[in-house]
Image (cartoon, rainbow over all chains, first blue to last red; front, side):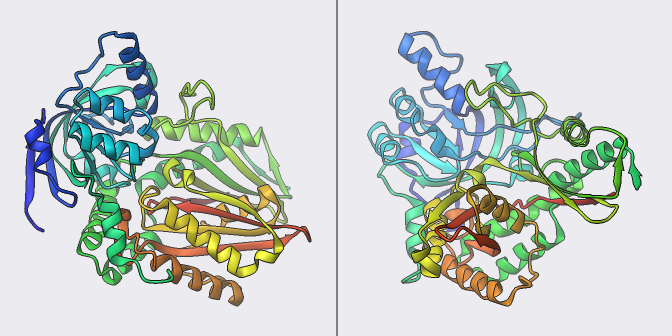
Length: 187
Length: 278
């Protein structure tokens, strides 16, 4: 399919419900970066009933730890990190209205079920194409946990960040579909 | 004895660390180009094209191919006739420290418990061997976490034999699926012992892609494994396709009569290593 769906954050439930696994999407607007440590801290705040440093409802989180920005650039390389490490934390954020997650690699059954229940989608950016992904980032600033260095929470302003929908709100899984199509018997 | 000044080591390692992260090796580029021709999936072809485009951007604009500029693994062959003016390990570490700072590479090393970043991408991992001669050879091998996390080590019973070995290798790659950023290069170490099999697996990744294993028996095994792996259908970025891996490399050594150690070290498509000879 050559058509691309262009979405702007924040995302509505309608935005994500219309997506299907396999859809090519571009994201424009603000996305927040967070990895393992930042997710752990966010959940601790949620459990304590304390205000979070970033909004969750309607937002998109990009699992990325960028390399440092050379002079004259807003960010270094910025490709996705492997998403399964955030699986323990994702369902709670989806419950709070997180609409999109960008990363690479498969999600657990619990996360996929949470996406169906709470209406969120998981999209993959190309792993290892950090220089290419960085071109879509127009601004970047640390908004929380600066001491985590590459693992801080950053607010990124992105323009047409290219991703593909892997898991939609119906529980479809592009990794499974893709591999099934090309698996050869007794492989 | 031939003297090698410490500063020369620092400088060479610094430059190699930066170069490894910015310039994808010609053999990897060629392997990706060949894969793009061989791949049948349109999505897969597009991904391979984007990986090649990414390598070009990285090289032209001097930013890392991948943001995960890895833990620094160094294979070092120190000639017995080399005379060092200072501490070798410290020089290697300083080279990495400087390279990761000056090259705007990511600091990706932390305490295993507190997860506190060490701030300078050290400590480094060094595999040092003493060899005849008066040269110092260093391979700087930045190794990312994604592919490393999907790597596995098995202490097989000898009765498992080749069928057991093959099954475990293909299973490891199939289970990993999209996670290690296919298309991958599979490094295999068979024999040795627990830790040696793993070192062999990582060392096997240094062989130039597209060159055959000099051992004909192992070359046949590599081909058989690659065919089986590419029948899993995992494909580029795990989205389905014919090219799951670009190559399988095997290194072996004799092992305990009661053991059959098997290490599978997965390397992502951003296969980065630079060789220095001083």
